[in-house]
Amino acid sequence: MEFTRPRGTRDFFPEDMEKRRWVEAKIRNTFENFGYGEILTPTFEHINLITAKSGEDIVEHLYTFVDRGKRKLVLRPELTAPVMRAYVNELQSQAKPVKLYYIANCFRYERPQSGRYREFWQAGIELIGSPGAEAEAEVIALAYTILKNLNLKDFTMHIGNIGLLRKFLKNLGITEQSNFLALIDKKEHDELEKQLKFYGVKAEDRKLFFKIISLKGNTRETVARVREFFQDKEILKEIDRFEETLNYIDNLGVDYSVNFGIARGLDYYTGMVFEIYAQKLGAEKQICGGGSYSLTETFGGKATPTCGFALGFDRLILALDKDGVKAGSDNDHGVYVIPVSKEFIAYAMKITSDIREYKVCEMELKRRKLGKALSYASKKGFEYAVIVGEEITDSKISLKNLISKEQVEIDISKMKTALTTGHR
Image 1 (cartoon, rainbow, N blue to C red):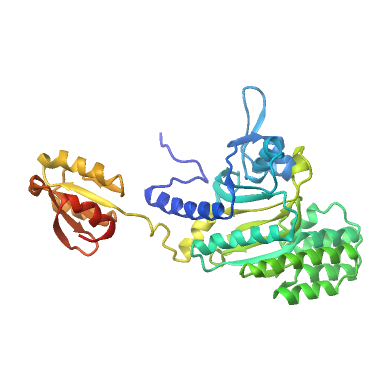
Image 2 (spheres, rainbow, N blue to C red):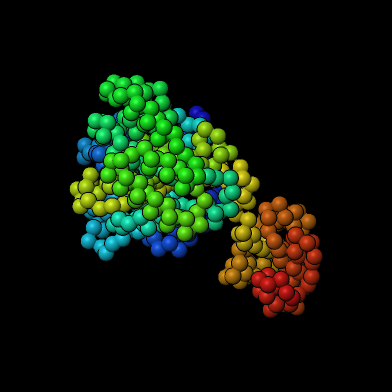
């Protein structure tokens, strides 16, 4: 019998995990610098939590099971619903805003392809209880800062406003808007045209609708153009709020384009929405998406304005690879300790233990000859080799820089200084 991993999953080996942990640490550090605290929710939830947020259509894409208590459960397909459920259950009484971040795995039964897996990771935030435009601006700046801190260069940020689209659809007599927003999100304009006709929308209004969702480009010009189309006070109020958010974003030094064709395809978004694309990823180029929404009342809580986003961690890794970012290159690659023969193993073990208090360190465990042990250490990327031989009886070791190939004999009391500063 052959044992293989399930379709749509991956094994991550040490070199993969070094890169992933490096990216995770950069993301985590940026989240915390913005004042967010980490939350971790269960890997599985009650299925009605997910369908309440995303509708019954999502069920075919879920990993579901019934436990021994006859409860219908699901492996989490995303993190927003579980985090907001936890907030409603436990955190509603906390002083606002509540700022939460997460980095965790999710599961969806979808066709695997490049950048899309059945087990995947998300990193994201929820800013709960801040209704102002400045909160939206901070969320966008946070997503942007993460990518800058990771040295990703080939990405573009697009910001839109789903509130404007909702109000326009309402004025056209369309109150059930989910299907329309999904079609906008998928860029299925032919089907969108059919649906607008089906609902009796006039030709001139259909033309205006397509003009609006096609608007994108320079910030001020694009907003000014969309403003020209409307006299409705509620829509103009939405545009004013959007412009206020953009003004704050400008103060934060974020590069972006306005794009009124962004709909996100989900019912709960209410105002500003944004997406970030890594162009080199092709069809699966979206690496981040988010916006303003209201979900707390769906889960039995008080209506609370929320803004957040989720980064597709796996696609982000691919984007960094395509961009040539050497993820993990700032890690400490450490020291390899080599006893030249069996009689020096005990000394080498003590030295290894001492070095591990301040630096990454491994010891030769296969009793290879010195040349082969040094070759192995170089291939594994160690910076230094500490060679333990007869000179240890005089409290000395040989220290070899595996990059410059320089080798010196030094007193063991000076070893820490040499390994941490390069000075002997």
